[in-house]
Image 1 (cartoon, one colour):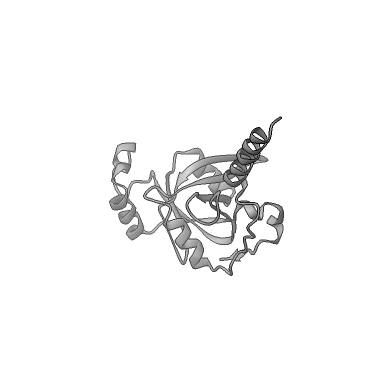
Image 2: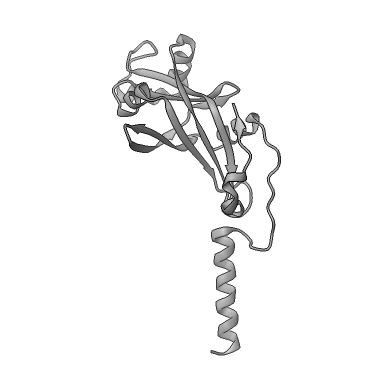
Length: 180
């Protein structure tokens, strides 16, 4: 193999390494984070604020993409319908895990925020009116209004979160957990 071909292969290897695992020669260190950093990260994911949302039914995990409504100092808020499987799973077992991903934050490969916590259902008329105003498409799925028993609001109100990047791959157990 000539030296030009070797250089090309090395260049391809370095480019793929940077794209897949981050620049291999740059150390990445995490800074001390607070729950407010978690709230900000979740709220800045764009209009839909998508996350992976895991529940369990018996010993079977169930994961789906969920659109978080908003986050504040009391937790991460969601809305669902009371006839859905996720609602029934949460009523039986309120433990969840969420995974938020932003490819544009942090080192190459982006940043993940994982949240493990417990859900509490909220029967708050003001919140139900707000979700109906913020998400007018709820009418299209059959919810007639804020007082409709199909409308269920819940939040992940306690637990822990941590941030993860590709440079953190081999030290996940050492990453700082943020209690809330």
